[in-house]
Amino acid sequence: MRIWFLCKVKYAKENEQGLLKNVSEQYLVDAVSFTEAEARIYDMLGSVIRGDFQVTNISKSNFVDVFFFEDIDIWHKCKISYIVSDADSGKEKKVTQFMLVTAHDVKEAYDRIHESLSNMLVSFRVPEVTESPIVEVFPYEKEDEELLPPPPSHLKPLSKVKAEQERREDTRAANNSSEVGSFSEEEEAAELREYNED
Image 1 (tube, rainbow, N blue to C red):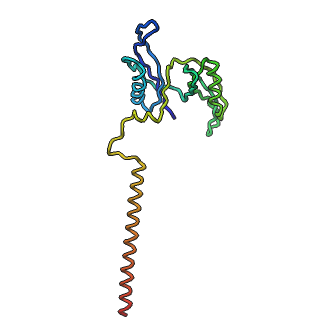
Image 2: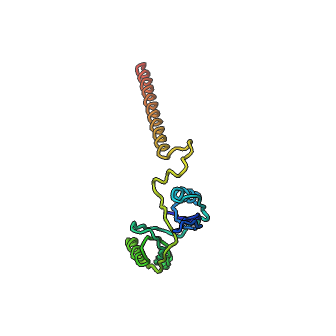
Image 3: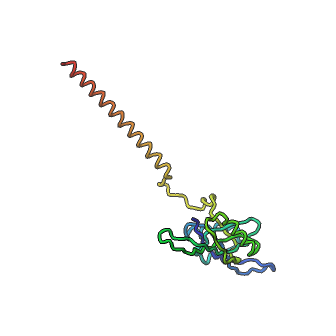
């Protein structure tokens, strides 16, 4: 499951009159830790924001899923609620979750969240949809692995370690079987000598 971090960024933005004005914006980043979230937000915004910027706050968000539609980049926060029953006690429990979806307005966001969750096995309600102050969402992509520091030189991938282990076991098994074979041939020769002497 993805962990989404809400990052608040402060920087001087040029307005329509050409004047610099300090602004604070929110970004959502998919990361495994606060440290990675900070590294990713600096990397993502470094090429976008001209001049200096400062990450003033990073917090774990309560979003469980994000749905992006390419026609618009206005994010809407959707509150989803549904009922689940406890298998052991049989009691029903109300679950509330928050999700993000891009849409032109609240009505479209409502329709799109229903469309995105159409495969849910339980029936759900969308009691609340509000426009979010989040400017952009950065999901984890495979190419982002370049941002991660390389593993230490003394560590090997698990697949390589397992392959080496299997090779050693095969070699050991082959050596043991050849030793057993040669020992039994010597025994047979000794038995033949004893038989011939009789």
